[in-house]
Image (tube, rainbow, N blue to C red; front, side):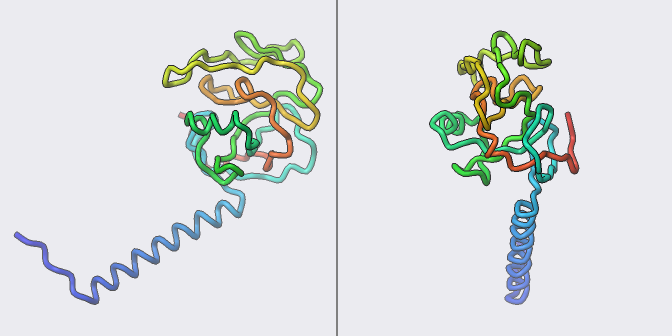
Length: 184
């Protein structure tokens, strides 16, 4: 049995409907990005819809932020390894959602886990290998430089400052606010 052929008018309506749907989806995505909304698909923080809220003060420990990583050879390698997703930051990567755990002048020690000014950070143990079995090299530790932040996620597999070190605070887009999320 053969499916009936669509008439010319039906094909035209189908094409118009498809184009309108594509326009609405693309327009909604653009409006969400321009409006400060992001979708998180990584397990570093709850999965779902987040909003970027303006940060009108210097970042402080405990702030959950969206931050664009700098365009460095290390970050390019992280992108090639699949640690950073495609997105709207310079270099074509997605903003990271991480918690600031240290700011300029604080001392970071990295061993089996992370300590800030001698205080151990919960859920900060390091992974020796990534999900594909590749070795993970931790940042050696030290004092967080001026105008920089040290970032963390309690998810053990998170790619954060444990591995790439402090990032410039100038990359912070704003505070990360959950809108509609799910933590598996």
